[in-house]
Image (cartoon, rainbow, N blue to C red; front, top):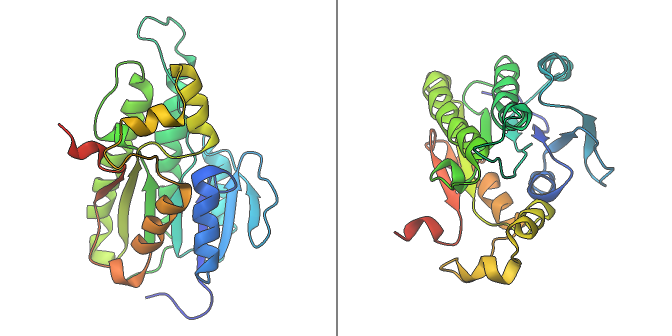
Length: 236
């Protein structure tokens, strides 16, 4: 079990979009939050750390300097289309490096710090980790990989009482989603029309799911992939 004092959470990609909402929610719950990103913006109430999750050595240095870590949220991500006939391999490798290898590196670096009986890891995957779309093979492959990694690590850490879960957002009102809508020639209203609930999710709604998963009340939940998508995956 962890000792007393304020719990410490590290959120990658923690100063924008979903990551910022998660950072703020965990801080509001009484945690010391370190919001890490390649170019962190100053946010009141949060500690900022520079981190490129594709640089494994940098990941290990950052975690090596932490005196305590109770919660890791792997949120840093990159989305976008990758054409099947594109001869340039760079985007494929970058997409996997950010979304999958970066998640693996942070999980690995956190293992010696997370406390027995109460440590928590939440990986932000996607509904595209649970289904496919034709024009995003790299993103789909990476996010499917994040869910596989989550399940494997959950089993490896179960005896230590450390939980590992994935949250799988569908459309969420963020700048990243808006860029994707522009690529597809659509807007938020068009995205909402395809969601049974009739609207896209907010970053704060995703953050609430993360806050629950890292709470003591969720100690029996591990190895799961929870969709936050307004019912989209419930449709055939």
